[in-house]
Length: 305
Image (cartoon, rainbow, N blue to C red):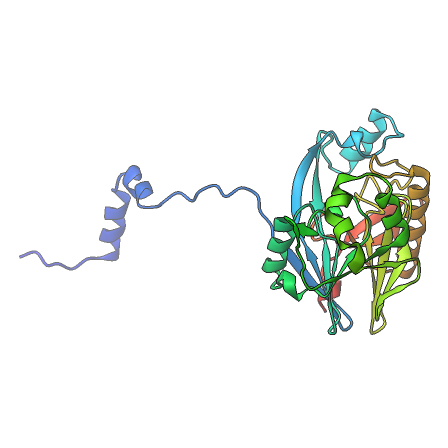
């Protein structure tokens, strides 16, 4: 009489005898998902919460047509290859920042369009109607694109703040994006200059050159500082390591280079972190003076403690 007892040796032998195709068929193949990342990154600065928002990211071809306009292709390629960077394309990031001071929710810049900024805000747990203030660092389209949602303001309860110099320049420029997105908000906009306060602990800092009134904002809370630096430098190597390299989108290239060197020297000396609007996501880092230029140090956990 044969018993129904199953031994471990017998089970292993039976499993080994199964055809490979049958074993494979029992396991579904995971689909390819493509690249991906988070939409928000939140840190603390004293009593503030600072959240960078990935409103958009996209590749751009031929980065030498944007960065290093005053250097040869050979030099650009050598610097890029030494930093393990491709020379045929670069990844661009568009990173507004929202600061919760405890008294107000303040958004700095608005990305390319309303869906991009509202989607990133939602991922971070905010809704457009919660935004108390919108601060515009400068008026290139990728910073004011999300101000309007169709014919209505994207942030219905917000007041607005920007540089008077910046506003006046674009108001006279005949720029379609300014006319459709910023001009309708003029009566709700406060005009400021270098050294003016946006709110307690948030101070405007002139960073002209990229545009005539381009402005950064220093955050200070409980003895800690962070600079919202916008577009003073747009790449960790092609701008920081080589601050004299000309950038296509800098309207006054000499002034922009002088601004880069001034702000980089300050941040390196005082060890102040910064948010760069186009820096690699999540856009927060430190600056090290190398003597010949500056080295970008992405934030690790410093602002999580």
